[in-house]
Amino acid sequence: MKLSLNRKPPSKNISRRIVTLLGLALVPGIFSGCQLFQRSEAWDTIMHSQIPGRGDQAGNRTYAGELRHLLNEKRIENKLVTFRYSVGTRSGPIVVQRSAVIYRDPTTPTYPWWLMDNFRSAPTWLPNEPLENQVAFAERLRFVEIVSTAKARPAELERKFRRLHGTSFDPESALDRRKMAALENGED
Image (cartoon, rainbow, N blue to C red):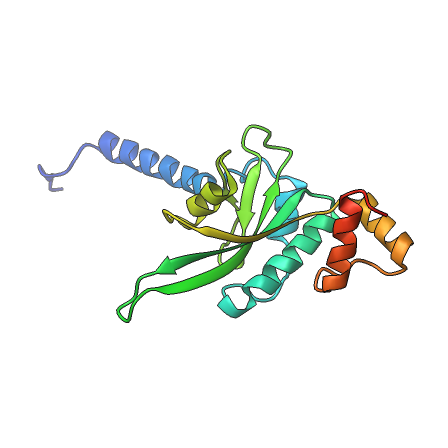
């Protein structure tokens, strides 16, 4: 039997492996929005949704609208945010417009806001900041311009709209949007 003098003591190799394994065990918790250990209804709704258009720039608005609809059905506070930003290319800057859903998770009261769009595998935590800063944080940009924000309407307003007008609210209809704005302002 030959002994090697260049071999490290086994205790160092074992401790190094343990540190590596612990580090790898923490990585999913860090990159999964800290929801690995505490899941909520909002998290489960988003993670188990089967909405087409993942990774498709053309289907970005549709994906966000469908996700918002799912969250509204579960009565989870959310808003659909459309934003734009500039990207420098060789041929000059181009403007990119995208949509995402920002939702409130009641199981994390200290840090309640999360963002999800069709380019993410899991929701991204957002700091308690103004909307522009939240979106810029999630997109890792210095500046974003908010184009529009659509908050979820209370169910009572939806029912009142249906009772007064005989149809459900269609956000694509300019007439329905005017009628809903009148309801929100207390005009019947």
